Length: 290
Image (cartoon, rainbow, N blue to C red; front, side, top):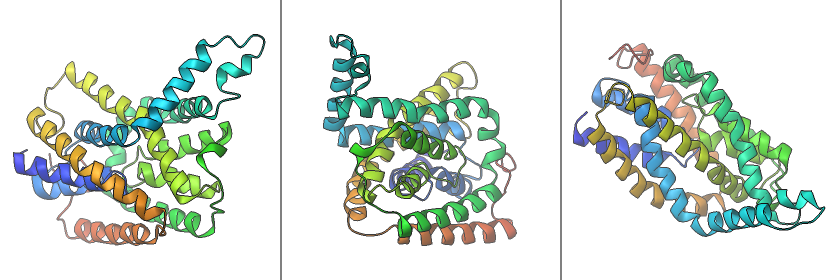
């Protein structure tokens, strides 16, 4: 992969990571168009670390408050009130536990289906189907969701609902933010609250996935997929810079407007991919162009 291709893919990752349009699908498609091959799951996971650093920067005060409250509740002298250790009387401490609970499904399913995630599930016909299906679900949830709950209204059951929605994003085309925001809207959260928890929940999952892929690569082929380490680093830095700007803009937009434009984008992208597959410009099998 050349430096210019890395920059382009970094821009794609940074621009699409926080939008409910599936950044992994965009990388899969654009990577093959400009480089002739799927950049690979490792390249995708590592560049997502860049955009996740943008989340850490943007939500730094919120994350600090949650971590401090969680640690304080664990170490505090609560006497016989054991529930207090789990944030029974502190919404910020509870939020930490809800993020832990919501992260369990993607960890378990990610390990169980590791091979399929890197091969079979990256088939572009599967991507087309998930782009359409989850576009429909996002549209319905945004249109009919109650939009009355705030982040403070999170519960264990709702956190698990978010968690399973996030786990579906292991399939390119679903979208991590799209899946979790759809789940949040369906459970009655406001557009802003659904997005806020979605991005906070993604922190351990994305960072864990990125470093897990790095650890696997450390013991084998030093080249992440069809890319090399230098281009991957360039793409990650670019993704961070653009991702931070997009994150700020996206949260402002969804506080006022609907998700309808993203739904239409998903449909349009699915249609374009179908045409490119049928004309032979793209290969459905991620290993076909390698």
